[in-house]
Image (cartoon, rainbow, N blue to C red; front, top):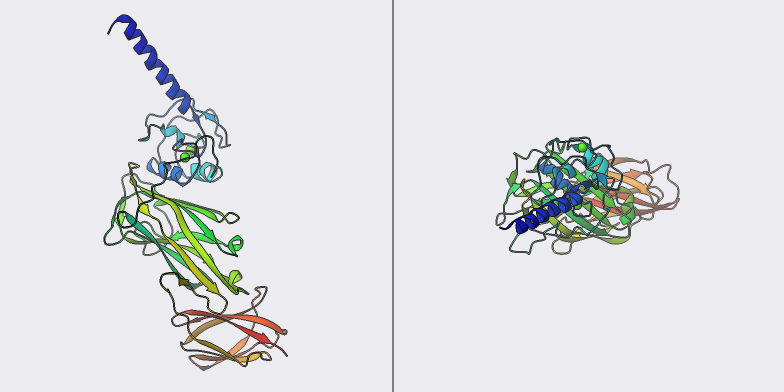
Length: 372
Ligand SMILES: [Ca+2]
Ligand SMILES: [Ca+2]
């Protein structure tokens, strides 16, 4: 190499170093992988370097603007982004505060680009599937719609799980009232309900029917392998079903990705379900397979004067009565048999009431009309 070529080579090297530095010398708080958008995949990147420490920024600031990095950290993600981007608030450590104060607060914000390539949807039959598993249950007296998440099966087992992010769409006439959460279950193969070994972010936008769930382990020396239930969404139904004639609740995974602790991505086959909910039969027929058979139910006389019998073909464990604005109505009852109750609503005013009940094998709702 001649002197002139050497000079050009050095100049080019210096220029490319400079341009790399310019790109990475500022942090958009929450955009951990520095691809232009804050989403669940940023939590996955953060999870792989959780607990790392490095130089602080001049100011601890998570406002959505370019925050200058004074000194880069000593390590880089596989995509070449400096670890300083994981320290979203600039205090010199990667921890939960970076999620709460930056990823969560700046979620969905964009500074450039579209974040394309963050997710990796697989094709049925060639990738690991994730499936919804809907059911109804009473939790502390609240009627809940639960939608379990099952990851992997016998044919497609999951190995080396470190984190997963998925974007959901949901729609129904009651979407704006939906109050839903995600938690690990007792039988989860990823973490316990207390989520002590993992990081989680669940954002919801009821107005647009969009949600994103991101979960990550937080010890890069660990990963998980398994198949089956990892956790469940729960949706409080009490206020939703009262007066509901019939509605379909659609929920689908739009995009999803699974990573290992090296941020190597695995494609996952997304799932979609349609659940039919109605006031007479609070059940859920999944379009492909009915998940729960409701009991046959009779209330008589109906209309009545505040006293009636309710009979099912399964033993009745519990009932509750609501008016049409969702207020719970007091009542007394005695058991005629395990499958039949005699009910008295002495103070109730004339009108329409909804009965929700739990039987040995299922749940029901029924409507009565009171006319004194
Ligand atoms: Ca990002
Ligand atoms: Ca930090």
